[in-house]
Length: 421
Ligand code: 0GY
Image (cartoon, rainbow, N blue to C red; front, side):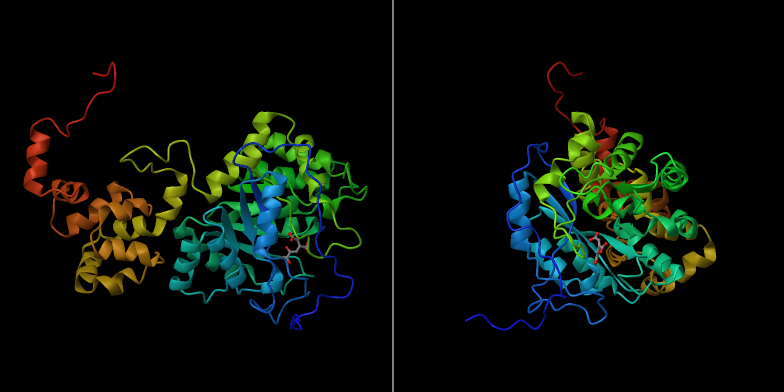
């Protein structure tokens, strides 16, 4: 006999479609469903007391089965507001995914470094800021900026959910966020209005003005007035964004489609919209593979050059406070304070705990992998009274003497490839 659940879904709540059809569109290999949720199960991962709705459970097993059925390889699971800032159900799903899911969490300003590190290890790569008043009690922007500054050193980004009428007020805030910002469902346009009209124009301008802002071209089933199965009024809006900003768009099912009344979409229909939003194979690959892989799996064309960490814009953001700490050592008074109590001095900087540990251990490779730039890190070994040769020897695992000998005899030996010099 099944146990009585502690939670009952709201009256009229629609569970997800029980048997979505197999879509005609075959997603390219490695495709990512970059907006979906897991809810509960409530008896294991209780819904938050402050929630604005109680859903029916939507499990990780159901989500992974849908992923396979629709022809996707990976998921980005977004913390639903019904779980508040309790990310346990999300983290549980990420851990069960065997690296095939990444997460976007909700955190409060009092989240600890240890909690952030644990979520990072599980696969969380972003936080969500929600401005939709029927879903949350809105948090003040200065608190959110504080959270954004905390998560930036981890290389995470911010996902925002708001409605079109709130964009003018929000734009200055979005401009100040120091990470990539992804807007859910194109900022919820009214798709009865013209795609070339002022309301959607404002959203297109937002992306044109701010290269750190991305958009999900999702939410057809929420925004369409013409409705299933073609959601035809939504298509020109999504297509406009995909064609204008092909390297800053993501797509997701939004399974299990919370708060949708009165219809529950067939996820197969939603997948079959993709070629209408992204009409070429190249656009489809960017939307479904390249962009989400770059943002969530750090997969860049140059990220697997052996022995090399490329210092690009993401690394610069991730290492910002570490590098600023290094620059502070230009001043004699700061060097003295650092030498007197390294831990206390490091704690004055909003660096991640891992970055601080890297500094304390003088582990330069680790600092570089966490966004440190050798031109700034040089201030640390200079403060220690050490040379560049000393640091380079440490990084290669050699004694300084062996390193010096190697360099004097022409540097590291390498085997040229066929036809190489
Ligand atoms: C979505 C949309 C909605 C809900 C949530 O976290 C949530 O509760 O995001 C909504 O009701 O519009 O993206 O899932």
